[in-house]
Image 1 (cartoon, helix red, strand yellow):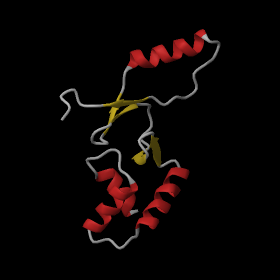
Image 2 (cartoon, one colour):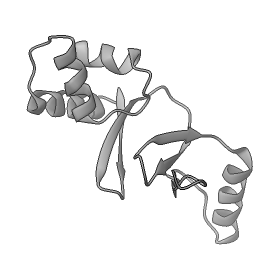
Image 3 (cartoon, rainbow, N blue to C red):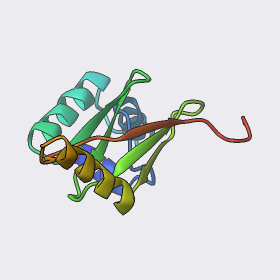
Length: 118
């Protein structure tokens, strides 16, 4: 339950298992990294959290609060940014429709870099 509490209270909406483990360790909780992975996987199976596997080779978890949103991942820092855009959602439905399909689910991930290079 402490892991769920960490996910709920964190300013970070997307946390890796290692982030959760560090938060546990920083609050002097006794749990290993393997335990954190196991609990997060159980939470995922129960629908409490959503796991995102990004191309840059890392996974993050976020609480499943319902509703759809997309993500941007900063290639420099690894920061994950959520965004919603109704025009993008509409265009995706239109594209599926033009090809004779109904859009059921999708995942849009933009890999970005800071404009100033910093």
